[in-house]
Figure 1: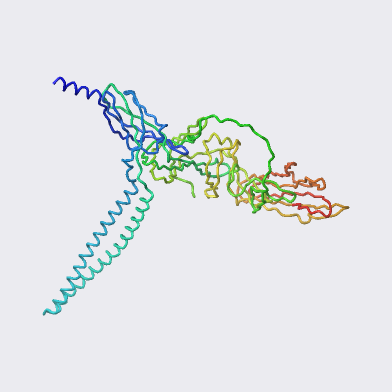
Figure 2: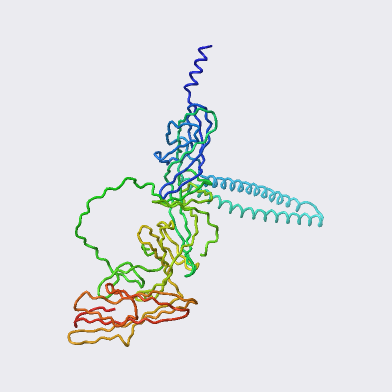
Length: 540
């Protein structure tokens, strides 16, 4: 008896209990290329060593990022992560939903087909008895009564049969569509293994404890997009922040606290090493000139050479090539800006299915101070563009991303926001404002060509007419240019620039014109070009 008791005590001393736990996702932080899950589980401590196996986790966990914490009632001895290929991720909800629709449709078809069989039997019965009634000796009144009943019954049966036939056709078409959808889902859905985190702990008390774990997981990401809305020159710019999110970790996120972070977790934390910088000759590639009636970032021919032009076409953001107002309530968002990243904490709980599809949410609306002005270069386009200048934009939590631009509730185009630049001011074009017209035409009575000695002189004159058709005053900057000579035999003489600002190094001319409502003004540009006879120079 004593020996048996000793064996039992020995077994109990060396036994290590195991407990399987399912940890619920409470919070998710989405990074540009991965996600971080925060889970909690409840465990019953036995006052000794025990192995807690947290099951039903993603198979794409980065094991080096796993962190397990407790509530102070136990000590963590070891943490291990493994992929379980025997227990696969349950069929996703879409497949389950389609299967349920297929089952319900098949049952409806069976019911209707059964009704069709009964109707056919009724019709056969009436037709068989009709023949007997014709042979039997019946009074005229009795025969009429039976015939009326027969015709009414047959009509009702045939009508119901036609209705069922049409309904069957619809159900069978639906069944075919559901089966095709199921086939597509099954072909795109592979059974995935699950992940297990095993935590060896030691405790001295028997009680319930809370286990917390977090880790990075692949197959999750997000990127920002924005709506910029211009609502008036005297009003701030309305900016809507939107997040494009997707995840295919193997498990849905249901009602989780969601944070969106711009931290690049896959970037190396190692300080780079600077290498020697060797100088050499640079041979630039020759670029073909283009002109399409608008500004073009390619080289533009200007007569005397080639010059680079800044793009101002359509609705663009200056730093990079490039419905109605939303009434729905936007989730409350708290911005946390760190030294190297920005985090947006969405206050309302969010859900995201594990299907790899893009999910778009608008998580913040804000009003940004913006300086508006109109710009036009009538030499290249007879359009006037509304420009917005955002000062100190880097304090607004903006990140590089696509922009949808709206001008007075009308969509005017898309662009790209580039925050990887060093300008304090961000210039945005909201496209053409049809309320202001501009025209550039040659002054024929001034423009002429004359010869003196061995020289040829060309007189060039342009008149720019700008009109404000809007009911309020506007201010517009108008750009033009005079040619620049890099040849001592070609001389340019400025005659009249209507008090414009001239950059003598580039030849750029700028006029700032203030226009009252319905007012128009004229700008005169005159210059002459002298060069040797027998030479050809394109002067305008």
